[in-house]
Image 1: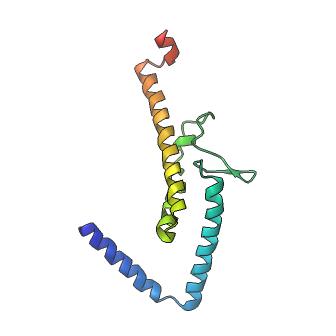
Image 2: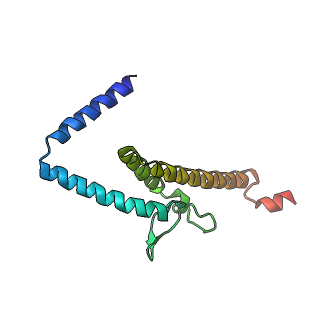
Image 3: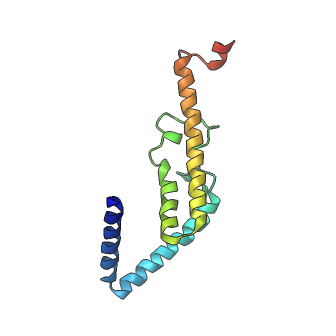
Length: 138
């Protein structure tokens, strides 16, 4: 309950602050928001099944691609992996467009699936004394 009150107070403060903007500033903010949303609408559909980081020849890579061999400090472990889903959740909150939430959920599922597969692999290595699973089971 207290958290809700703090959030409401913060929202009212932000709204009061926004009212003080000049009309040209409000127009500029609206234009920037429209540009961001237009780009994210296009990019989100193009990269909806990925956890993107780099753009290579106009296409995002996919940090959740387990068929690639990633370094220990890269791939699924890369520190920016949650940014994509976070951006989509923020745009969903701002616009109410359900498609952003849907794609954010896809990103979360891919991240969680890749994380579970990675953790399973690490667990098996530890339990099997560092030996490949196939050697232990034969």
